[in-house]
Length: 268
View 1 (cartoon, one colour):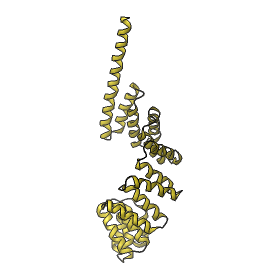
View 2 (cartoon, rainbow, N blue to C red; view 1 turned 180 degrees about the vertical axis):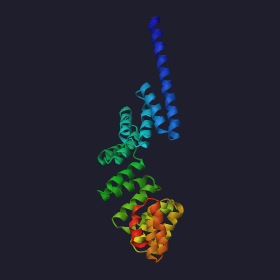
View 3 (cartoon, rainbow, N blue to C red; view 1 turned 180 degrees about the horizontal axis):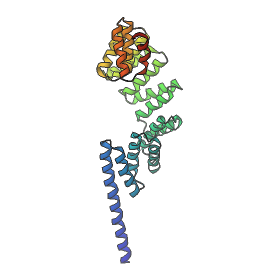
View 4 (cartoon, helix red, strand yellow; view 1 turned 30 degrees about the vertical axis):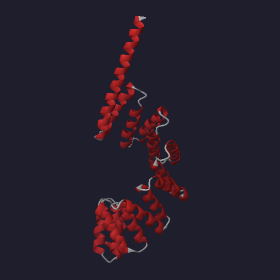
């Protein structure tokens, strides 16, 4: 009897030791992740999972690391394992849905996003992501999803921006501008909102207004090539060809290919 008791005690001590070792490795992995040392983090998490094959958080963090390294299938496997270990963890479904979207698997992404909102009806990002998926297929559904997000969080910038973008794409310029004005009232330094507003004004041939908004966008963020391309168009129609060419050259430096036809046509 005493031998059995001693064996059980030794087993418990051994398991506690392994558990602590797995936790130590996990903490080391988190430090590596913060430093963006993803390969090293994965090595630590691999060991932690070997010690504890049911270590939910280790699978989750390893999924993040693999995603950062564009190892999508590996990340997908890890997030799926988390779902198996904990079917009520919202984060795992949401992260897996984002991977499905990157892999072009929209049906699977939608299933996970619906699951997210079943578990958490206030998860705003899930509504916005569903809207983005529906945008090209079902406009009414897209608008419905964006409006759900705004109802939950009236200051959710991405929902307003994507709603404005949708209206712009179907040439509903007044509605698009209205949503952008709401967004800019929330965040007066949203460079993307000024850029899209300027693009809409170009379409409406409001070149002076477009120039004002595109200038504001570049003042806030001067790293977006497409904004320089649009501003170049505004300069061209305002008879400022030299400034237009300067903008298109800057756009080219920033990697925007849309400017190349303008450079070829107007700036030889």
